[in-house]
Length: 162
Image (tube, rainbow, N blue to C red):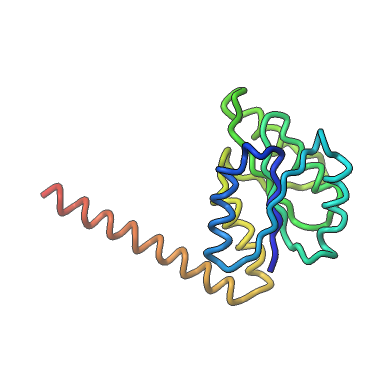
């Protein structure tokens, strides 16, 4: 199981690292790279074209502003691509979100929230879990733990209100 996480700029790494941490929780290997759709378009296309042969099964693409990385990758690979729009100084990331989510017919990109690295990783895990049943079990356990944690928070909240 291998996921690629590409970011358009090294400055995106503090957010991207949250996705990498989630993947580590699930024992999913992550290849993390800085590749720009605009400054290194040939590198981006080459990476996407060769990703499947290198064992990558899902790609997460984090980019801000024009945020074309996910689309460039999706155009050059049959693999699922998850777009992670990054909050930028312009429009608080709304520009990034719109750039990632508005894909033309035939070039799908799943898109998560602005700076939604954790959900990008979790969606990648869910996609892989279709092929890897133990990963599906781990994801179910992750969700069950979330439920237990919130129930515990609610119980503590209710006790403190009394």
